[in-house]
Image (cartoon, rainbow, N blue to C red; front, top):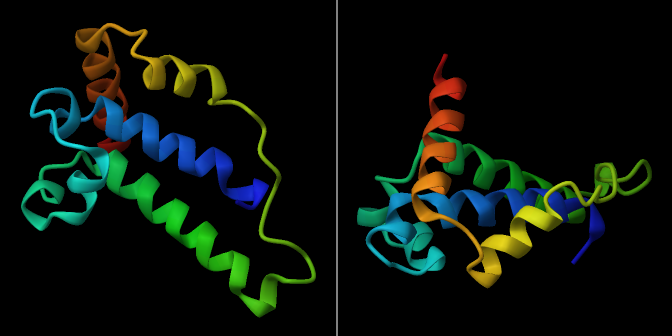
Amino acid sequence: MVASCKDQLKQVAICLQRSPCVMIERNKPKECISNPELAKDLPELCKAQLATFLECKRGIVDMRKRIRGNGTLSTGKYDEQYEKLSTGDFNPLEEMHKLDQLNSSQKQ
């Protein structure tokens, strides 16, 4: 994967891991995105981050962005948070509360 989209991918993964679709209903993140019935219940924040990631991926093959580049390289900002969620080292209630806070601040 191109390094410029790694941060966006990790943002999407973290948001999906915190979503009720994965946390409560115990679906796989891929199912939450691909199944229209499950996707309609995803938080708006996750949908926005997914759109940002897909736009970044589109930019990789966009010939207009070839010379100046797709964007900044990965900063590693989400590496630690992603690692905790991936290994199961987290409190589910705390993670859902964080997602609710982020989602409500985006709507304002």
